[in-house]
Image 1 (cartoon, helix red, strand yellow):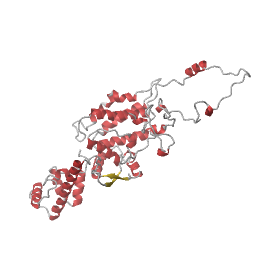
Image 2 (image 1 turned 180 degrees about the horizontal axis):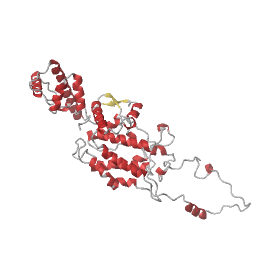
Image 3 (image 1 turned 135 degrees about the horizontal axis):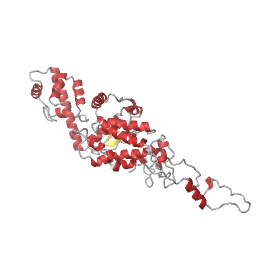
Length: 404
């Protein structure tokens, strides 16, 4: 599949050439000679930065279509397309030399639409619309992986649908220093839009959108990635053995995160070039099911018996008698708010099953938000509880699903 950047996109080149007024026969001739991108055409007649003469252009067009003389309109349109290709290539080379490639490249709109249309034709039984249509920002995250040639984890909270993206606000702009640190420029902030995973269905749809985005950008095949996601949910829905608790959603998210970490450790090829057996990550995804470093996170956890009736009876036996010897009356109950060590008198909901073994408060005694750690808190910055990791000893500014 063609690369996603503006210079290497065939769909973008075709659209720009058509808008410039170049005839369809000349565009087909360029494609027939493997000159269907700006990057390739920029070196075809003369090098970038060198203006091509009319004789050079006539000789080149005569080679493309022998015996056919270009009209004045075709000559003007081709000169425009050639100038655009050389200018774009020069800009890209200068940006690379100045170190401005830190900003990830976004997938061009014509390339994205062409690939999406091909995907819809390939998977006719799948309705890629509504909650299953990935957001443009999700495509850009995957395209960034291809440009950087490194496997990165894309959590389900970042897998927005196109509908959710349209309802969100646009990224704000901020003042930044230019590369030479001599002047200020106004740049658009990177989009950090996220969604709240409130149910198993919303989680499955988010992972489906990520699967479609990985397939569209040529990183992993839809069938292979969907098989892995279905395997995770099959283990998640499986009934536990006696004495063990059901696999929690946080376990599924940890396994999903570990899968990408494991692939980043093992992958040594190129994400830009498909392999003979499929797409670059397909062989690594197929091995995840037998990789113990990943499936370890999906093992059932034994049920704690700390609150069983047997333990309670043992505690009752050890508890000293508290009868009042003077009047035979039982002692007065002390209000919980006045009990020693509980000066605040505030009572919290019990820790959810998915967070068993985690802490409910920070070392400073502040309440930790359970919803933030499970991805269900909708209050954001207005939440009265602390949005920190509930893993004992961590307490950093991330949910427990992203704890390393």
